Image (cartoon, rainbow, N blue to C red):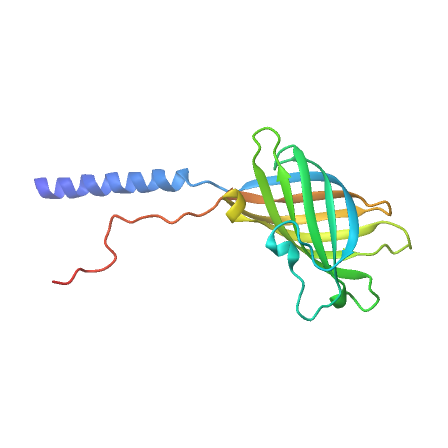
Length: 193
């Protein structure tokens, strides 16, 4: 084998090795679960003005949005610490019996250990109790707000809110570092002369 072919073979092997090492070091999504116990306040007329901009979502067709806010504590995969949130209910688009209303909201979970804040945008439904004055059901999906936490991820929320406003929520999902733009050493265009 010529020296040139030996060099080409060695460069190819080193490049493949570097590529395999790079691929192995990519972060895999991490499964997370958290529990939230909170007190809900409201509802107040109009869309929420606290939380992320998503919490203020009130479809143009609706003139009947209300806001509920909550504070409490979280434990689990997002850390242990205080939680706060705001949820806009779209009462105009509720089910015909007004049993369930679409919701748009945000939840901020502060990890007391390192003061990091995980902010989740949520979308789902809040349903009245089958028995008047009983427990309401909240079911939703969430995604992490990457502008705030530098992570990406999705999951689900399920829980109940009793007639005193006390809520118990369970969050499950997966998170990973947010994708970042990479700079290529290879030119993407051919220069002109």
